[in-house]
Image (cartoon, rainbow over all chains, first blue to last red; front, side, top):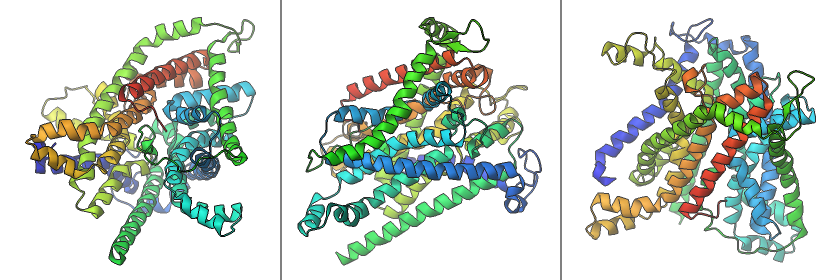
Length: 265
Length: 303
């Protein structure tokens, strides 16, 4: 790789970053396009789309559905996944390998297969498709990612801290809520954010199980045939900026804390 | 991070105490029950559906049977699309590796002296995740469209003849797949390179290894776990994807992949047995591949 040259890797990587950012810049730019119906050709700059987002009512409704689905699926997946992660690291039990395989398999299964399988099951069981089936499906594919994310956090926990809690006559409940849980929290938060992001942007599994209900990605998919209204670009851009701001704040506070620790040490 | 899912990098942190307790059951049962109800039984539903046969009395309905002929039919009918999926996914994985590996090297090793720049660069890699997958793909469609800038330049230099389009081609679909899965390739490789001890590279240098030799004998083997998980994390979703190849996005009737066929059979034609049989064929193919890959690279401890 060094034969590639010191400047070569800089140039190549900067090009790769530009490449990654092109469609993002495009989507954001077209949220300011002065277009009424099809948002394909640049017509002029306007803020209007940002102020009238919910005039295209279906966009906002789809967005609202995506938020509700994302929140409920995240809460369910994070709770169930954290419990499994704790059990996997902390306890011995029968069928441990089978359990690990059961958690790994959904991640190795293509989304189209997960979606078709759930849809076939709902069809056979006569369950009507809608928001509930979308939430059930999203919880499933987020669950494994939560287990993997929280698991590495549990594994890096120092058991001596909990032992100290028990030595000081803390009840199991106290030890869990005062020591284990706060220490796991960064892992749990990371897992929850990952779940929400996966759920919010999912299209394939949703499309098989949504019935007549519309999420933001499924709205975009249906609208793609006749042209996406600029309002969809507005919502996507707003979500992008909020997410980036959150990540940057987290990164910068972590960097500041590291510097403080370095100074104190 | 979840991106280590396919590597063994978490194996280092083995638990200190492990005991038997009824609490384990309490912690496990709800989640395991959920996985059985919504992962295992759907797979069984798929198997049952894939063996169904058309109802002789009601048109469009299917009855349970043992019609394994369905598998023969779908493989004969859609063999071309299945082969194309594997080919497109392999090509996209290779392209993503060619872009993702140097990028991961740059962030994990070149930028190591500048921690703040390093974390900002990492944010840039995951930035595409924060904007809708479908809108990103549509953006490429519009950039490549006949009225778009790229086609304009290409036709003015004569690389694109009149009436020829960039979208709806093998190029545009593989391009879209590559773009969409680059972060999945870059992040696991970054995760292995970021903890690579730079003194090992110095040692290679001191022992008169050329940069290329050092790269081949030190860097590459030490990042193999990341390359392996990145390849799987890119190949699996790319093989099953049907957004990039769909007509409304970057594809055309000539680029139909197996995901498109499953989607059309299930949701449009309502030929459930065919869709189910194809899904199971796809899943079997992926699982065989994963098992082979995992065995070859010797990482048996997957989670």
